[in-house]
Amino acid sequence: MTRETVADFVRQLKTILAEVPPVTALQQADYLDLGNLDNLRNLAQKLSSEKLPYNPLAEALDLILLKVHFCQVDKVKLGINELLKSYLRKINSQEEKAVTQLYLSQVDLVFRRCLDGNFPYDQEIWDYLGNCLNTTGLHLISLGFETATRQLLEVFFHLGKLAAQKGLQTSTTQGHLRLLEQSAIRHGYPDLASSAKNFRFNL
Image (cartoon, rainbow, N blue to C red; front, side):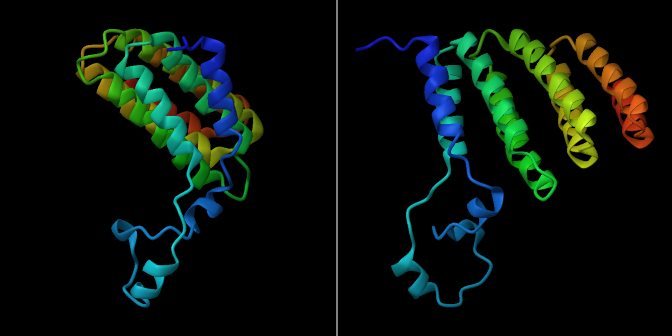
């Protein structure tokens, strides 16, 4: 079996993530999902004409979760990093909310998998994820993505609560929320700053 280098892993992830289409394209795919079917009209026709599923982001998630399974902490970190970099490349004013929800839900799944009890580097991953979310949030604020930043703050807070419940340290998380609060103030987003402050005090 050929050994997978770190570079091999990142190269594969980058290739897959580069194929992630706009969110609207993912939502309008012709694959028939019975778990998300709005109505039964023309179901027989839909069954006969459906196409294969297409979701590169799900494939990227599978690769990262596999690294969690094998406790390959450096590759898990790189996976989180590549997910968030892909997110920052994909976000736009038209799909701000949907793109943010899509990507942050993947990050959430990775972190929750790291907390299942079999992964020995949960604190290391939490610290790293916090650094990545902080950088991502600061960049979103600087670009004026207020809605996306609010979503990120909410996810950051809920993951922080989950980390605290698992006994992980969250002092660094509070520091990140303070930085995001200060950045929001500087860029003229008092409501965002208030949210960051409240999350920080309630963590």
